[in-house]
Length: 69
Image 1 (cartoon, rainbow, N blue to C red):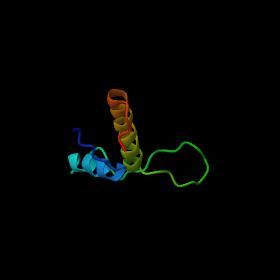
Image 2: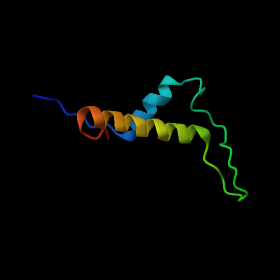
Image 3: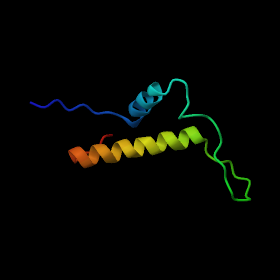
């Protein structure tokens, strides 16, 4: 009998943030936007966290054939 545990994206994000307690990778710096429009750019930390969640999802799906969250 296999135990199926559902994991949410928030739990994965908390795990990733726990690995970077000094916030060296998931920092709060702003991304550089080359457009001249004055639109608020996303923070660098949010962008990287979203990218890492996407990579985790893709790797899990490619290995197990099932969505991670």
